[in-house]
Amino acid sequence: MERIAVIFLVLMIIFIVLVLISVWIINHLRIKAKHGKGYTSNYPSSYLCSDGHKVRSLSECVIDDFFTKKGIIHKYEDVILKTTGKKFKYDWYFKEVDIYVEFFGFSGKKYKETTAEKKTFYRKNKLKMIALEPEVLSNIEEKIPEKFGKVWKEIIHEKHCPSCGNTLDDRI
Image 1 (cartoon, rainbow, N blue to C red):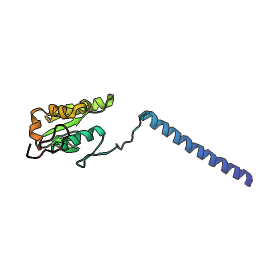
Image 2 (cartoon, rainbow, N blue to C red):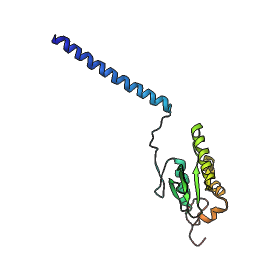
Image 3 (spheres, one colour):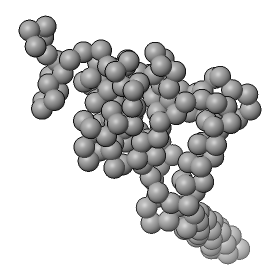
Image 4 (cartoon, rainbow, N blue to C red):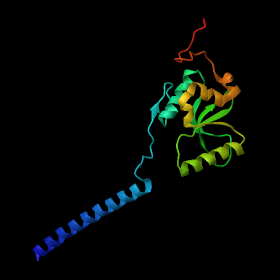
C-alpha cells in the first residue's frame, strides 16, 4: 500500500512539472506570436545626449545633440499640457517660439495611425508643430534649419563653424 502511495506521489509530481512546463511554453509562444520575431521590450533603449537628455533612439540623439551644438534651448519629451482630452508626449519643445518638434522615425501600420492621430491632435489644438522624418539626418545642417524656416534665426544663440560645429568666438 505504501509503495502505491509513493508511486502515485511521484506520478503527481511529474504531472505537475509537465503542466508547468506546458504553461510556460504556451505563454512563451503567445508572446512571440503577439510581438513577432522582432519583439522588443516595453522599456526602450536609452541614449545619453551631450546635454544630459536621455532619448529613445540614436536618431533622436543625433537631433538633440544638433540642437545643443547650435546653442538652441530645448526641452525633451514631456506631456503637452495646453490641451484638454487625450494627452500626448512631444519629442522637443522650444519655449521661445512655442513650437513642438516631432521625429517620426518608424514605419508600420500602427505607427502611421499614431502619427496621423498626433498630427490631427496638433492641428485641432492649434499648436505649432514641425515634423521631422529620417531624411533630415542625411544632411542635418541644412535640412533642420529649412524645416524651421524664419524661426531658426530666433532660436539659434551662438555662432558655430559650419564644418565642425564648434562654437566660434567674437573674432569671427
